[in-house]
Image 1 (cartoon, rainbow, N blue to C red):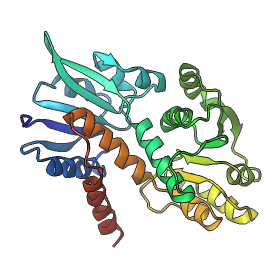
Image 2: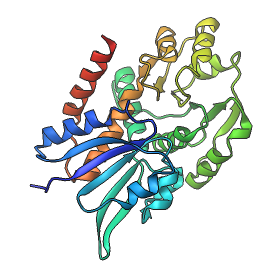
Image 3: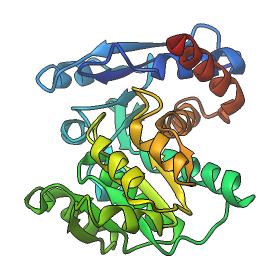
Image 4: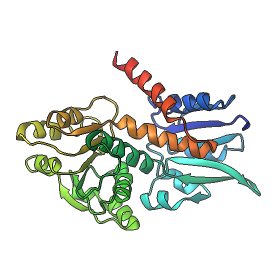
Length: 293
Protein backbone atom coordinates (compact mmCIF):
# COMPACT_ATOMS: atom_id res chain seq x y z
CA UNK A 1 0.00 0.00 0.00
CA UNK A 2 1.25 3.47 -0.86
CA UNK A 3 2.53 5.53 2.06
CA UNK A 4 0.10 8.28 3.12
CA UNK A 5 0.66 11.48 1.21
CA UNK A 6 -0.83 14.92 0.99
CA UNK A 7 -2.31 16.92 -1.88
CA UNK A 8 -4.12 20.24 -2.13
CA UNK A 9 -5.81 22.67 -4.45
CA UNK A 10 -4.28 26.14 -4.62
CA UNK A 11 -6.10 29.24 -5.81
CA UNK A 12 -7.48 32.59 -4.76
CA UNK A 13 -10.24 32.46 -3.75
CA UNK A 14 -10.46 28.70 -3.27
CA UNK A 15 -12.94 28.06 -0.45
CA UNK A 16 -15.66 27.27 -3.01
CA UNK A 17 -13.60 24.55 -4.72
CA UNK A 18 -15.16 21.11 -5.10
CA UNK A 19 -11.76 19.48 -5.62
CA UNK A 20 -11.46 18.34 -1.97
CA UNK A 21 -14.79 16.53 -2.28
CA UNK A 22 -13.70 14.75 -5.46
CA UNK A 23 -10.20 13.78 -4.37
CA UNK A 24 -11.25 12.69 -0.88
CA UNK A 25 -13.95 10.47 -2.37
CA UNK A 26 -11.32 8.93 -4.64
CA UNK A 27 -8.93 8.24 -1.75
CA UNK A 28 -11.72 6.60 0.24
CA UNK A 29 -12.78 4.41 -2.69
CA UNK A 30 -9.18 3.40 -3.40
CA UNK A 31 -8.50 2.56 0.25
CA UNK A 32 -5.69 5.10 0.51
CA UNK A 33 -5.74 5.40 4.29
CA UNK A 34 -4.04 8.48 5.62
CA UNK A 35 -4.07 10.35 2.32
CA UNK A 36 -5.56 13.80 2.67
CA UNK A 37 -6.50 16.60 0.32
CA UNK A 38 -7.12 20.19 1.36
CA UNK A 39 -7.72 23.65 -0.11
CA UNK A 40 -5.08 26.33 0.47
CA UNK A 41 -5.95 29.90 -0.42
CA UNK A 42 -2.86 31.10 -2.26
CA UNK A 43 -2.17 34.32 -4.11
CA UNK A 44 0.33 34.72 -6.92
CA UNK A 45 2.68 36.43 -4.45
CA UNK A 46 2.44 33.54 -1.97
CA UNK A 47 2.80 30.79 -4.59
CA UNK A 48 6.65 30.56 -4.66
CA UNK A 49 6.82 29.91 -0.91
CA UNK A 50 4.13 27.23 -1.10
CA UNK A 51 5.86 25.45 -3.98
CA UNK A 52 9.25 25.62 -2.26
CA UNK A 53 7.69 23.90 0.75
CA UNK A 54 6.80 20.73 -1.17
CA UNK A 55 8.60 17.56 -0.14
CA UNK A 56 8.16 13.84 -0.71
CA UNK A 57 5.25 13.80 1.71
CA UNK A 58 3.27 15.48 -1.07
CA UNK A 59 1.69 13.68 -4.02
CA UNK A 60 0.90 16.89 -5.90
CA UNK A 61 -1.14 20.02 -6.30
CA UNK A 62 -4.23 21.03 -8.19
CA UNK A 63 -3.81 24.60 -9.40
CA UNK A 64 -6.66 26.92 -10.26
CA UNK A 65 -6.99 30.61 -11.05
CA UNK A 66 -5.13 32.88 -10.86
CA UNK A 67 -2.08 30.58 -10.60
CA UNK A 68 -2.12 28.46 -13.75
CA UNK A 69 0.42 30.61 -15.59
CA UNK A 70 2.57 31.68 -12.67
CA UNK A 71 3.26 28.12 -11.50
CA UNK A 72 4.90 27.23 -14.82
CA UNK A 73 8.03 29.14 -13.82
CA UNK A 74 8.26 27.38 -10.45
CA UNK A 75 8.40 23.72 -11.50
CA UNK A 76 11.33 21.71 -12.86
CA UNK A 77 9.55 20.34 -15.91
CA UNK A 78 6.46 21.32 -17.89
CA UNK A 79 4.98 18.62 -20.10
CA UNK A 80 4.45 19.42 -23.80
CA UNK A 81 0.66 19.76 -23.62
CA UNK A 82 0.76 22.19 -20.70
CA UNK A 83 3.54 24.12 -22.44
CA UNK A 84 1.49 24.38 -25.62
CA UNK A 85 -1.67 25.41 -23.79
CA UNK A 86 0.27 27.85 -21.64
CA UNK A 87 -1.32 26.70 -18.40
CA UNK A 88 -0.53 24.16 -15.68
CA UNK A 89 -3.37 22.93 -13.50
CA UNK A 90 -1.53 19.99 -11.93
CA UNK A 91 1.85 19.75 -10.21
CA UNK A 92 3.25 16.28 -9.58
CA UNK A 93 5.88 15.65 -6.91
CA UNK A 94 8.52 13.06 -7.77
CA UNK A 95 11.96 12.06 -6.61
CA UNK A 96 15.24 13.50 -7.84
CA UNK A 97 18.88 13.20 -6.78
CA UNK A 98 18.64 16.49 -4.96
CA UNK A 99 15.30 15.70 -3.30
CA UNK A 100 12.13 16.45 -5.21
CA UNK A 101 11.32 17.04 -8.88
CA UNK A 102 8.19 18.98 -9.75
CA UNK A 103 6.38 18.38 -13.04
CA UNK A 104 3.64 20.64 -14.33
CA UNK A 105 0.92 19.16 -16.49
CA UNK A 106 -2.59 19.97 -17.67
CA UNK A 107 -5.64 17.76 -17.08
CA UNK A 108 -8.19 20.39 -18.15
CA UNK A 109 -7.89 19.19 -21.74
CA UNK A 110 -8.70 15.62 -20.68
CA UNK A 111 -11.65 16.91 -18.67
CA UNK A 112 -13.01 18.89 -21.61
CA UNK A 113 -12.66 16.04 -24.10
CA UNK A 114 -14.26 13.48 -21.81
CA UNK A 115 -17.13 15.79 -20.88
CA UNK A 116 -17.91 16.59 -24.53
CA UNK A 117 -17.85 12.88 -25.35
CA UNK A 118 -20.42 12.31 -22.61
CA UNK A 119 -22.59 14.80 -24.43
CA UNK A 120 -22.10 12.90 -27.68
CA UNK A 121 -23.19 9.69 -25.97
CA UNK A 122 -26.36 11.38 -24.72
CA UNK A 123 -27.21 12.93 -28.09
CA UNK A 124 -25.92 10.40 -30.61
CA UNK A 125 -25.62 7.16 -28.66
CA UNK A 126 -21.86 7.05 -29.21
CA UNK A 127 -18.91 8.91 -27.73
CA UNK A 128 -17.04 8.99 -31.05
CA UNK A 129 -18.58 11.71 -33.21
CA UNK A 130 -16.62 13.65 -35.85
CA UNK A 131 -16.47 17.36 -35.04
CA UNK A 132 -16.45 19.45 -38.19
CA UNK A 133 -17.83 22.70 -36.81
CA UNK A 134 -17.12 24.00 -33.31
CA UNK A 135 -17.51 27.34 -31.57
CA UNK A 136 -15.72 28.67 -28.51
CA UNK A 137 -17.26 31.52 -26.53
CA UNK A 138 -14.60 33.60 -24.80
CA UNK A 139 -10.86 33.99 -25.19
CA UNK A 140 -9.41 33.54 -21.70
CA UNK A 141 -7.30 30.84 -20.08
CA UNK A 142 -9.88 28.07 -20.40
CA UNK A 143 -10.25 28.85 -24.11
CA UNK A 144 -6.67 27.69 -24.74
CA UNK A 145 -7.38 24.29 -23.17
CA UNK A 146 -10.60 24.20 -25.19
CA UNK A 147 -8.70 24.67 -28.46
CA UNK A 148 -6.47 21.74 -27.54
CA UNK A 149 -9.51 19.62 -26.66
CA UNK A 150 -11.29 20.46 -29.91
CA UNK A 151 -8.13 19.58 -31.82
CA UNK A 152 -8.16 16.19 -30.11
CA UNK A 153 -11.80 15.82 -31.14
CA UNK A 154 -10.88 16.52 -34.76
CA UNK A 155 -11.66 20.22 -35.20
CA UNK A 156 -8.56 22.35 -35.71
CA UNK A 157 -10.24 25.50 -37.03
CA UNK A 158 -13.06 26.38 -34.64
CA UNK A 159 -14.70 29.77 -34.49
CA UNK A 160 -13.81 31.80 -31.41
CA UNK A 161 -16.36 34.47 -30.50
CA UNK A 162 -14.97 37.16 -28.21
CA UNK A 163 -16.07 40.55 -27.00
CA UNK A 164 -12.76 42.16 -28.03
CA UNK A 165 -10.29 40.95 -30.65
CA UNK A 166 -7.60 43.01 -28.92
CA UNK A 167 -7.59 40.54 -26.04
CA UNK A 168 -6.84 37.40 -28.06
CA UNK A 169 -3.05 37.71 -28.37
CA UNK A 170 -2.30 35.16 -25.65
CA UNK A 171 -4.83 32.72 -27.05
CA UNK A 172 -3.37 33.07 -30.53
CA UNK A 173 0.11 32.32 -29.21
CA UNK A 174 -1.21 29.14 -27.63
CA UNK A 175 -3.04 28.21 -30.83
CA UNK A 176 0.18 28.64 -32.83
CA UNK A 177 2.01 26.30 -30.46
CA UNK A 178 -0.74 23.70 -30.84
CA UNK A 179 -1.00 23.94 -34.61
CA UNK A 180 -4.63 25.09 -34.35
CA UNK A 181 -5.98 27.84 -36.61
CA UNK A 182 -9.05 29.35 -34.97
CA UNK A 183 -11.19 31.95 -36.71
CA UNK A 184 -11.72 34.92 -34.43
CA UNK A 185 -14.89 36.96 -34.59
CA UNK A 186 -16.38 39.68 -32.44
CA UNK A 187 -19.39 38.33 -30.56
CA UNK A 188 -22.46 39.67 -32.38
CA UNK A 189 -25.70 38.89 -30.55
CA UNK A 190 -27.67 39.17 -33.78
CA UNK A 191 -25.55 36.74 -35.77
CA UNK A 192 -24.35 34.47 -32.94
CA UNK A 193 -27.51 32.35 -32.47
CA UNK A 194 -27.37 31.00 -36.02
CA UNK A 195 -23.63 30.33 -35.71
CA UNK A 196 -24.08 28.46 -32.45
CA UNK A 197 -27.14 26.50 -33.56
CA UNK A 198 -25.37 24.89 -36.52
CA UNK A 199 -22.23 23.86 -34.59
CA UNK A 200 -21.49 20.27 -33.60
CA UNK A 201 -19.92 21.51 -30.36
CA UNK A 202 -20.13 24.81 -28.49
CA UNK A 203 -17.90 25.42 -25.48
CA UNK A 204 -18.56 28.48 -23.37
CA UNK A 205 -15.54 29.61 -21.39
CA UNK A 206 -17.15 32.91 -20.40
CA UNK A 207 -17.39 33.78 -16.68
CA UNK A 208 -20.57 33.35 -14.70
CA UNK A 209 -23.42 35.52 -16.03
CA UNK A 210 -21.29 36.91 -18.89
CA UNK A 211 -23.05 34.62 -21.38
CA UNK A 212 -26.56 35.60 -20.26
CA UNK A 213 -27.03 37.97 -23.24
CA UNK A 214 -26.15 35.06 -25.55
CA UNK A 215 -28.84 32.98 -23.84
CA UNK A 216 -31.40 35.72 -24.40
CA UNK A 217 -30.37 36.00 -28.04
CA UNK A 218 -30.76 32.25 -28.58
CA UNK A 219 -34.29 32.31 -27.22
CA UNK A 220 -35.20 35.44 -29.15
CA UNK A 221 -34.03 34.31 -32.59
CA UNK A 222 -36.07 31.14 -32.89
CA UNK A 223 -33.16 28.88 -33.81
CA UNK A 224 -32.93 25.11 -33.33
CA UNK A 225 -29.64 23.76 -31.97
CA UNK A 226 -28.40 20.38 -33.10
CA UNK A 227 -25.13 20.08 -31.17
CA UNK A 228 -23.62 19.73 -27.71
CA UNK A 229 -22.96 22.68 -25.41
CA UNK A 230 -20.37 22.43 -22.67
CA UNK A 231 -20.63 25.40 -20.32
CA UNK A 232 -17.47 25.50 -18.21
CA UNK A 233 -19.31 27.43 -15.48
CA UNK A 234 -20.79 25.19 -12.78
CA UNK A 235 -21.70 27.86 -10.23
CA UNK A 236 -24.45 28.98 -10.59
CA UNK A 237 -25.98 25.81 -11.93
CA UNK A 238 -27.75 25.60 -14.30
CA UNK A 239 -26.57 28.67 -16.16
CA UNK A 240 -28.89 30.79 -18.27
CA UNK A 241 -26.99 29.70 -21.36
CA UNK A 242 -27.39 25.99 -20.64
CA UNK A 243 -31.10 26.44 -19.95
CA UNK A 244 -31.57 28.33 -23.21
CA UNK A 245 -29.58 25.72 -25.14
CA UNK A 246 -31.79 22.94 -23.85
CA UNK A 247 -34.93 24.91 -24.74
CA UNK A 248 -33.83 25.26 -28.38
CA UNK A 249 -33.15 21.54 -28.69
CA UNK A 250 -29.45 21.20 -27.91
CA UNK A 251 -27.72 18.80 -25.54
CA UNK A 252 -26.15 20.33 -22.43
CA UNK A 253 -23.09 19.18 -20.54
CA UNK A 254 -22.55 21.08 -17.29
CA UNK A 255 -19.20 22.42 -16.21
CA UNK A 256 -19.20 20.02 -13.28
CA UNK A 257 -18.57 17.17 -15.75
CA UNK A 258 -15.34 18.80 -16.91
CA UNK A 259 -14.42 19.33 -13.26
CA UNK A 260 -15.06 15.66 -12.46
CA UNK A 261 -12.97 14.28 -15.29
CA UNK A 262 -10.02 16.63 -14.91
CA UNK A 263 -9.95 15.68 -11.22
CA UNK A 264 -10.10 11.98 -12.08
CA UNK A 265 -7.05 12.37 -14.28
CA UNK A 266 -5.25 14.19 -11.46
CA UNK A 267 -6.04 11.30 -9.14
CA UNK A 268 -4.59 8.85 -11.65
CA UNK A 269 -1.41 10.88 -12.03
CA UNK A 270 -0.92 11.50 -8.31
CA UNK A 271 -1.73 8.00 -7.04
CA UNK A 272 -0.75 5.78 -9.94
CA UNK A 273 -4.15 4.10 -9.65
CA UNK A 274 -7.15 4.16 -11.97
CA UNK A 275 -9.48 6.85 -10.70
CA UNK A 276 -12.80 5.61 -9.24
CA UNK A 277 -14.88 7.96 -11.38
CA UNK A 278 -18.22 6.52 -10.28
CA UNK A 279 -17.47 7.10 -6.60
CA UNK A 280 -16.21 10.61 -7.32
CA UNK A 281 -19.37 11.33 -9.31
CA UNK A 282 -21.62 10.18 -6.47
CA UNK A 283 -19.82 12.52 -4.07
CA UNK A 284 -20.05 15.40 -6.55
CA UNK A 285 -23.76 14.91 -7.18
CA UNK A 286 -24.39 14.75 -3.44
CA UNK A 287 -22.76 18.13 -2.87
CA UNK A 288 -24.51 19.73 -5.83
CA UNK A 289 -27.87 18.39 -4.68
CA UNK A 290 -27.30 19.73 -1.18
CA UNK A 291 -26.35 23.15 -2.54
CA UNK A 292 -29.47 23.23 -4.70
CA UNK A 293 -31.79 22.29 -1.83
